[in-house]
Length: 62
Image 1 (cartoon, rainbow, N blue to C red):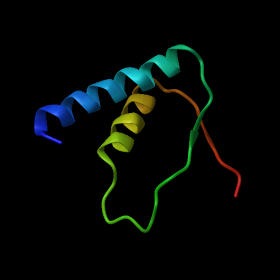
Image 2: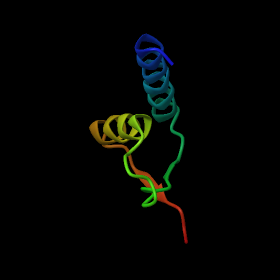
Image 3: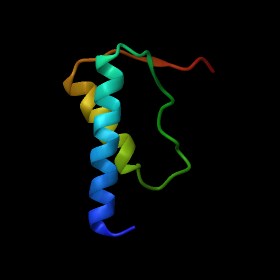
């Protein structure tokens, strides 16, 4: 994926999560995968948008 394609993918993801918030979807946060060395930029983007919107998320029962 080129840097331009990556930025386009992030923009599509941002639009997608904003639409889900606007539509009132229940969002489940599956949490951080401790086995991964770094966090997904897509997960970080979604978390930032959700936090800025003060939108409630739900934890999955374990």
